[in-house]
Length: 341
Image 1 (cartoon, rainbow, N blue to C red):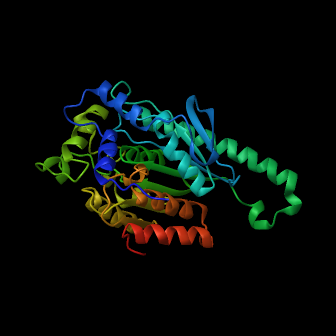
Image 2: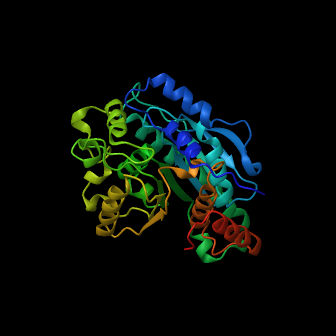
Image 3: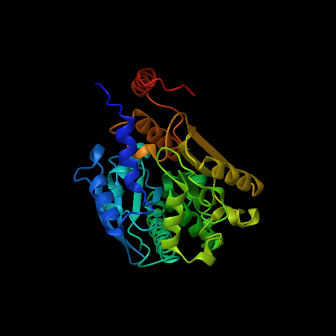
């Protein structure tokens, strides 16, 4: 099977995720939806509509999944765009790769609903998902307690919070705002190309013509202007890098996946230092030669498939791939000149 490798087409697709300084808001939203919306989901993943805490959500269910683990995915879209429709295909691939159900909330968007509306919605979803999962797990324990060892009997529902780009700020704020009992049951925090400092004094926004292949500092500036008022941009719930390390005590392990060519890499490395100061386990997964949000361009970049495979392995805690999967992986690495780990 031949692979189509088209970096230019990939970049063109990824740029639809970003609100540019001169973009009309409604046109941006429409183009994002038309680019990413799909009628057919991969790998026989099923989609159900659920309502958690008065927030409509997709519940994406793969053919095989763990009944004790669930992902809540906070989509990107510059705080003003994106939806469960536009992220359904990507999150279905993540559900399949991780053998895990994925909840995608339709949280309120700026500027109609500015900060902190999106954070409140995600928090409500988190609480309700946890409550439902705990009830289901308790029923399982009651029905099959004779089969469970002590470790299983004492276990709780495992919630993974995942997000990309602007959604990372919302996801981190959600955890910072949640009561300790809820934060404690978050199994991990997974971030793709996260936005971590939206303050006007950070060099991406303050500097002139700071950009990579996809993203520019002025894009961040436009998005945050629509998300919240100027005096609020140093709030840690908007710019997580502005929080003190102590605020992150008790955070779940953090896994960040991104391309090495992103202008956001420096911020992420600063975030890594912050996490280590708070004794939070941290993994930075940098992909050689890759751009911002390369994971969503799977029809153009074989690295996209490999990256989702790696995320799935981390989430499901699989120790290895089958011989067939390993052979296919090695084949793609050689064909596309991707360095071995």
